[in-house]
Length: 334
Image (cartoon, rainbow, N blue to C red):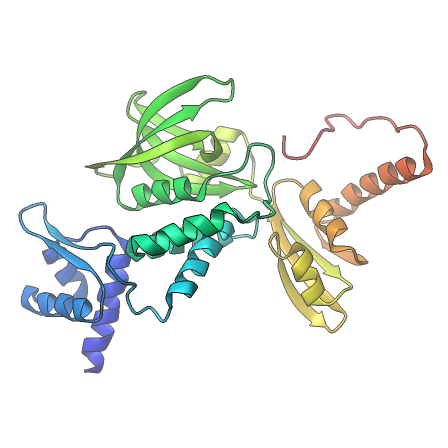
């Protein structure tokens, strides 16, 4: 019984990780016969998971939206809250949180009943979130989910795209990966109209639609998708890791800047704040919002940024004229 239960959980995990499985491939992954696989599929259905079987050469098994939420140790209210929370977390600046949130969101949306989707959309529509993004960096969570699912399912995608110069065009692509870099999302895909690999900013993308046409994945001409995006943008290296000791209770700091960073208590009166960024102006801003004394652990360059900010604010507070403008200085996030 224990082996059967473990295999059932493994089967569920596999089916949540891909839109559709061929029966033979799924049986091989589980190390069972097709007859045993059919019994395990029946067991999932008895538990309330909506598994659809499609006959034929192109057929197989897949999870579909059901009439009721499967028993995931979540009630309806918790499922709605989870969906809305994942949509918000997908746009966070916390290292690794955005990617994990999108992966989880694609799994939840796949089996979420339509009535709960409508509730989640309604709640999100009347909720304002403090977004950690530069100008034009906002991405519709529904668009993000559509693109993520197309990447996962190796399904061709169409969308309208606005280039940096304002030129609009319709695109047909084979999506490869989503990359969260700095405060923006990027899609790495092979553009079928132009016959080459391209990087697309998701906040410039509209009406993404999966075509239903599957494709064989191509070899990306880079070490990984993140490296491809950095090369396309001319960004060298990786994001800067920031660590600061803040002299205030962790709960207070988390309420102020928790959506932008990880906050770990050190003792009752202090905490350790960590974040990753491609622009040190953003942790400087976050530390100002934290409203407490702090000590910079790393990187040392953050002290220089804070010193420049302190000098500007001191001149502004004293009513003195602006100092000389540093070469290349500008607004963060532009």
